[in-house]
Amino acid sequence: MGGYGAMRLALTYPEHFAGAASFSGAVDLANTLFQRHREGEIDRVFGNMKEIKGTEYDNYYLMEKNANAAHKPWLYVSCGTKDFLYQQHRTFIPALKKSGWDVMSHEEPEYGRIRRHAAGADLPGAFRRSGFIQRSGGSGKHALSAAPGR
Image (cartoon, rainbow, N blue to C red):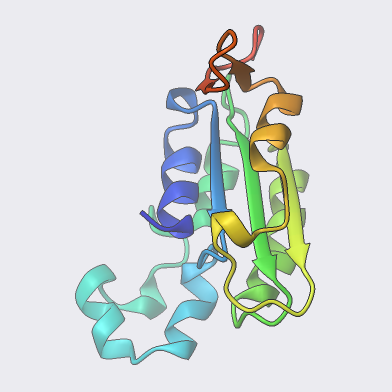
């Protein structure tokens, strides 16, 4: 699953997730993605791209719809400054914060597409600091769990 799908699921079903991450994901499918790709190909997957705004495929719609959810997951969103999706992230992150979502963002200067291993951020450390990852004894492994009271 890509970053768009991770954000969509977390924003649609916030009570089911402790956290979600997007690495160079198409977080604003409703407004931008169809401009980069041939509309016919995207239309076969999602229907008419111009009609996605305000539907269950629009992450902005979902973040507002569930802004008052009793539990909302912690979100991590990263993107390279040279990625064609960079401007989506520049507007998506403030919109999440304005809607009351707990989000950490990372921008990698001069990078195009970011993958988890090249993100330049200590993601396990970030999740641990947020209270969602706890070290499992001396094994060095991490367990994803909701922090108490979240």
